[in-house]
Length: 400
Image (tube, rainbow, N blue to C red; front, side):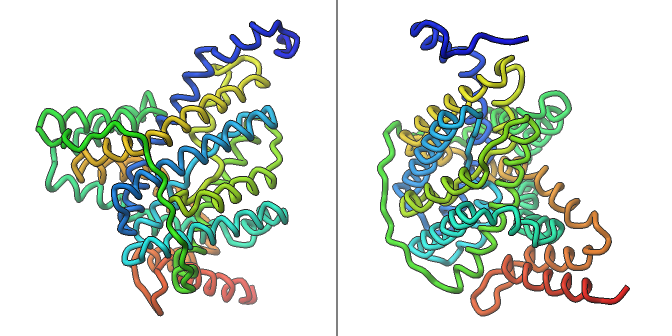
């Protein structure tokens, strides 16, 4: 079954074809899923670096504007539904790794990681770099980073048990029938209960556009080693690799190296304003690639363009997004962050332990990373990689 090429339609019809409800709704849902499932983790990362309210707004502005440009530009250029997103696991790493670091060093980490990303794309070494490290080691490091968020979910039940247990129950039930919307539904449940209990701080809500805040970067070798390198690896392995896989699974042949390069370049431009990471989307991208979006796979890129426009709106009103999450009780933020990362934690641990020949190395990586230890002022994620890779290489050399 063939469809009429959009280029052969009259100008008015071509214009109206951009306003199909299925395209617009898919783009909106993809963006909402991203914001509701992981914006809270981004806030925790910014607060770990001591971000002010204005800097938090700038982070959301930079993220929204950058993702808007990338999603719209790349989708229009290649006529493929290329949706970009921020790095949720990367934000989780920053939420622990940036504690005690000034904002200037955090910006230095963002630029360092974006530079590595750009170089990987330009040189075409992206795939080779990811293949060198066993997926079990990468999964173990990611699992160790995210463990704290899973534990905080249940810790929050001690102080706000009704709200958190209700969110947990809604999440588990929704996963059985509406898996894509489990996190947004859990968030909606938490907000309703918090409102009924008088826990929402509505007085902090502010309906104002965000103002970009520029921060000069500072480069510290301990911060770059301890946080920058693990941050880069996590973003590449847990975001860009699945993002490429989703495109391939839907039979889209994207110029991966070029796309990766552009995400790194955007990070270099907007990093000083709080744009900590830009990468390919995976779960939310799939929402823009199904037959429900459009029977013609060649037209589904329009859903990603709409998602980019909604990202623009989220960026412009980044201060409003910040004030909205500031109105939520801390337990709600901890619960929704934990629920959003529950599947990723499980997948990471499974990935870490599924291969018997690398299990020892992965276990050491996981425990070292989760411990939060610091040697030479370098964080645990880096040492988890060092210890895990050392054991892996030793065991690999051992004669059979």
